[in-house]
Image (tube, rainbow, N blue to C red):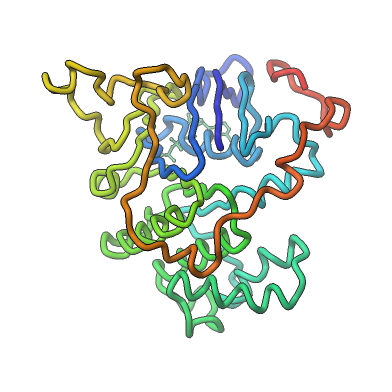
Length: 302
Ligand SMILES: Nc1ncnc2c1ncn2[C@@H]1O[C@H](COP(=O)(O)OP(=O)(O)OP(=O)(O)O)[C@@H](O)[C@H]1O
């Protein structure tokens, strides 16, 4: 679903790279935490996936497409495949709850009757039924984040990226937001969440990718916020904590970060079904000539 191969990102020529040689693969249906100190490159990595930034070197593949080769006019299709949630919610202040969610469908030209039927379903999913007509400044932080998640999810993206989604929330509200993201993941959406929240990562025990100064230093199956120390029992086999980029390499014997979710009844899927295939993105690669902009120095040739 997501593949990074030797990805380096420099914001300035000759500057220290924000990401350096990152190789990782995230399969469909996984829930993956992206951790690391401030400035380690987490947001940069997420921005590469929606082509808000371009890699300086290496391959970034999303839903089977090399994002560097997606024509500019098709970038909106990429962003329909990838929903985004941010720490600061980024709601439209002059639109109601329902209006914020509907906006995501309006901009991609979904018919009015579809918007009218889907928006209440998604608001029910995120627990905001009854608050459709409120404006963002009439909501708590947790409710605002629920609206943001509803907006990101309403188009049923294949992937949900969350950049510190609980950063502005108290612990109880953060846990509720995590339950919601978990529900969405259970319904089939791949979730990649950047966070500093050690408690949530430790409680969820999902796959953890850790960046340090732009380098992927850990890829741990069911990891904690901090690396799990190898024990004699695990070191006799293959310690998960010693498997950087294991899923990316696909090496035999290295435990893949399957992200197999705990078994329980799906709820997001009950309401809105499984994520759609990426319209216009899953097809055959565009010929190089259709790429909308010339490559920058250091980018992979189109
Ligand atoms: N637009 C930009 N222009 C120049 N440098 C940038 C830009 N965005 C990020 N950087 C630099 O890239 C590095 C990685 O930043 P990034 O925001 O990806 O880190 P992060 O791990 O998300 O940090 P935080 O946890 O504080 O959000 C930092 O050194 C940062 O200063």
